[in-house]
Length: 299
Image 1 (tube, helix red, strand yellow):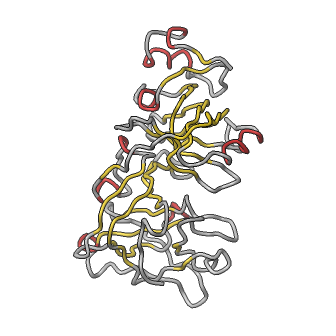
Image 2: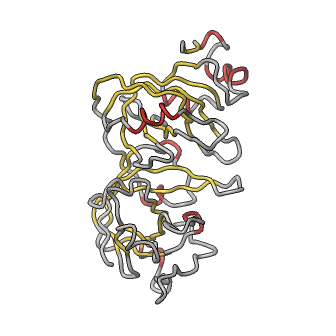
Image 3: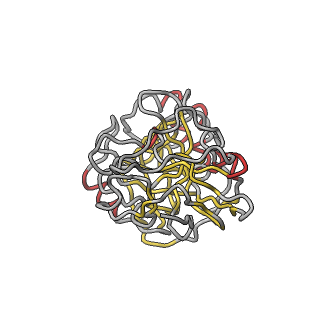
């Protein structure tokens, strides 16, 4: 499908969105970069050409890739999702194509970009992905602070990028919540898709978490979590096995953590926004890429 040019809907992205982003049904696409799309101020139908794949989810039910402008920089990455359940779903053949993309692949992605005006949630719903048949050097990880990783911060400029920081032995990340409400599922297994950690000086000695009970049930989640909590997700679960899914870890071949588990050393992963079910409240999740890049002890 031929992409829509900027001139065909206005003079610049900020004007085109008013006329072209009113529907999730894409008849044509605006060719642009990730950074320009994300800073354009609204939703719409876009084509991202010659972007590099920096991470891939192993999920077959909702295939997702993270793509970035090769030059990197602020706002330069986005999560592109092949959804079969949303109002903007992709085809089975597109899902197969998404699953076939490898890290470092140069791709062209077309789809509907959603930018929530109230929630600030962002995502690109894929219509089509084309592997360009070449590999590109991905931008290096962005150094950020632990505060920028915390649940209630909106570090939009580095969302969807690989980010990194170093956890000091003097202030390790400690277990904080085995059962964050954001990660609960109604499925029999897995029931919990992540956990919460917190810098020890912030959490303090009197905030030790509750661990798995004797019947392998998860403890109650923390109702009013500390804003310094870092939500750790398992988007890349085939490489990151650490889990607090008390009743399902063994069957799912996950490494079950315990209340003494801590993290010291360099960590790296992808920082993404998520939105609570039935709400307009967004929060951040840090998804480690591998166990080696989130060296958590214990369990």
